[in-house]
Length: 95
Image (cartoon, rainbow, N blue to C red; front, side, top):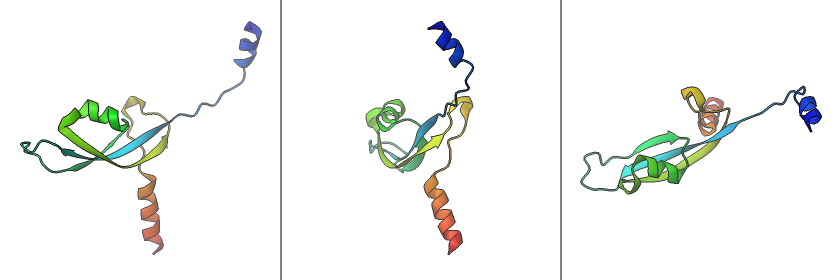
């Protein structure tokens, strides 16, 4: 067993990480709140986690879109941009 681990340690392994990005439309559910407008948020939290972390039943979220990004989110890196945005920009340039 030790011999196998030793041999495997000499072979380089390439590890690829990826994460999912979600884009939500967020609005308050309470009518007494001063900020009744809605806004778009980009997050790496999946829908139920975002809702639990950012307000529970006091906000309503609607998932607009999601996409995968290569890499990791450590060191406060910004999430990758939406591939949908790149598609729209390239189609506008072709017209």
